[in-house]
Image (cartoon, rainbow, N blue to C red; front, side):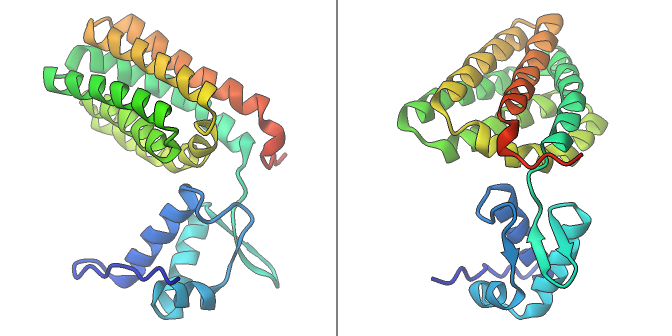
Length: 225
């Protein structure tokens, strides 16, 4: 079955193809180590080879694709070492964002945060892993938005794709999903109480726990020295 792209008049075709392929890599539809064949991808997406080739080059610049001499393009492996470096930074960023959010968040945003936490529990019960991944991202994005710090948001956005590929793997176990849910509740309660110190502590602990799980599961990832 072909996966023809929705062509948006306001967006160049090369950007539509790039966005599609980037999302496919981040969400795991295109697997780590999978070879990217221009002809097959072009046929599948209903486009010519040129925008596919341009998208692959751009993805290489972002570190999501690697070019192997005389072999072609491949989806970059999940690199646990890189992720651990990112998580060290993200722990501090999340703590700062939660602390600022506790000062600056609106009542409407608190309600949204609580609704996400409630919906997360429902998705656990339904076994909806894709829904859990989506809600986890929404939860963290909302806290950063509530920080009202544009530079902080920009820095975090640059780290998102490095984290999201592992997020898909991390949330696929019910035990881990329940732990995430409890930590989200603690963060939300601290922010709602306007307790900046507690919000920072719980947000940092939340990311450190994720980091601990990555270390435990490191045998599943490609660890590059």
